[in-house]
Length: 351
Image (cartoon, rainbow, N blue to C red; front, side, top):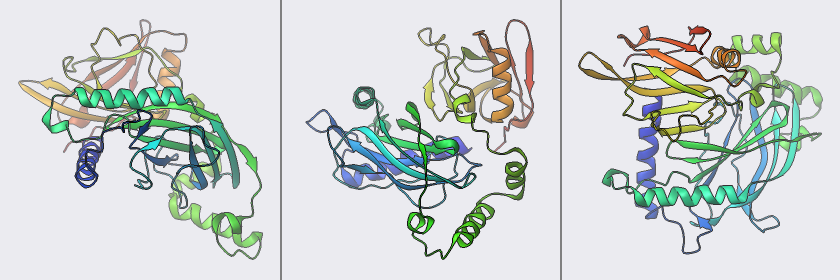
């Protein structure tokens, strides 16, 4: 129950922080400052490291909130890694990002300074606070608002993404490209390398320490798929179908790092909203007289290939589920009005 567990843990941690800091969901009297934190993300199969990073506050030259740096990053694209509670409780939102990072798979440093869509970020934070105040569920009152985190993602090829999120909802607000730079590895990693051979050995040992033999072999054989992170961003008109409770919400994560915690897929207002390819879905389905919770984790390459084939020309596609027990026997296929592709590489574990 990975997604459920992560969500429960997130809420529990947030509740504790609310007790410690007092009403962490509130924005200040100045409606442009909020209680938020910075975090980082990187792909699972391609280790990265942030050398330095900072979200620069609006209208400031350099002042801002640092992004956690150091250490090998490889949790998964769009998945938060670190959580540092630092600085004043209420902070301005950023309008720029400065970041320097290293791609182990390429043995390459990158650096970039980017303008961020401040108005969009501000609107999301205000929306999150408003939604939080509007909730009537007593169990939700002390949880953080829907938007209280700004996350920077780095990937091979110099890819940089920024998401705004919290409480299970994440939205991409920026996607850009950093430039290759040359840095002294000793200074960058704060390690006393005597020569290039030592720094190369260090990088090799890091790769072998964090990647499996199969991952290392795949990287050696296939190289880095530099177009992968832009492919993640492709959107399609798609809907779930089959035996899923239409009156209950779905929690869905997407390959581009976005996620929705409460997607009521029969809502007429969002039926035709294009969405990225799903990476994970949590939903309930009726089996006999029971409501059964399913958590499906898709193989991103299989699922993306199916979406790219069936939704290539703007065709509406449906992700059909035939829930069964045990959960591992669920059937899933993607179809449009002309053809159908059965998915086989997903996971749906029992608990």
